[in-house]
Structures are given as C-alpha cells and as structure tokens.
Length: 157
Image (cartoon, rainbow, N blue to C red; front, side):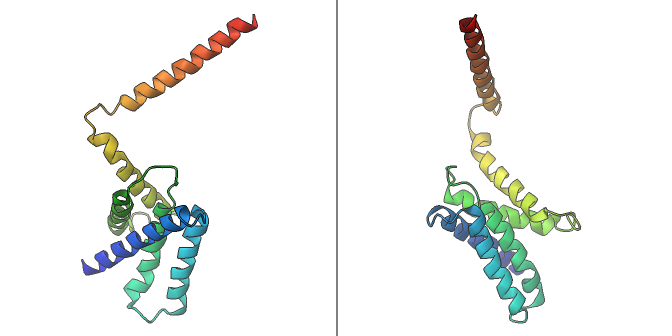
C-alpha cells in the first residue's frame, strides 16, 4: 500500500508539472511530457541503485503515464481537482491491469486516456439532465447543416 501511494504521488506530480509546462510556460504538450520523461528516466537509468529495485522499475512508468495525462489541451477547461484525480485513477488502473497489458504497446497511453476520459465524464454523468443531452445537441447541429445545404441549393437554381 505504501509503494502504491508513492507511485500515485509521482504520477500526480508528473501530471501537474507537465500541465504547467504546457500551459504556463508555453512549451507545448509533447515537449513538456518529453522533458519530464527524459529527466526522470535518465535519473533512474544513471542512478539505478539509489532506490530499491521496485521503485527504479516502476516510478518511470507512473511518471510517463502521468505526463500523458498532463498533455491535456490548454483549451479545455479542466480543474486542478481533475488533474489530481486523473493520475490517481491512472495509478489504480495501471496497478491492477498492468499484467493484462503485458506485451502490448501503448499500455501507458491507453490507461492514461481511460483515466482522463473517466474523470472528464464525471460532470456529464452527475448533472440532473439526461446523458443523451449531447446526442440531442449533435442532432440539432446536423439539422442546421442540412438546412443550410438545402438553402444553398435553392439559391443556385
């Protein structure tokens, strides 16, 4: 349990630092994620005996997954609660599903995406309105587009 908390804290810190580098310092999501992954991965590569082996092997994985979450677009209004809950959920998912993804590429990115999407869906699910409200909005948008096409065709003839 103590090891998991350390992994979760590393993931949360990586997410927050990546998001800050991305939004406040305008480094871009890829550069911010790569910078943090390079620093942490390089540290554990060059100094593998500073911490016990379980930390040396797992902390870079949780940090890289956290940086994937921190790459969220700056145009999306995301709260710091979501930015701290998503990496925690990522840590839980990775902890319990890492054996399922063994041998598959993209396991960290997939798990990070699942955690972020679940966190971003909370406001939609907890609203009093029906979940299908988004589908109704899409239908209105497509009807407007169809209506504009019909009007353009009538003008051309």
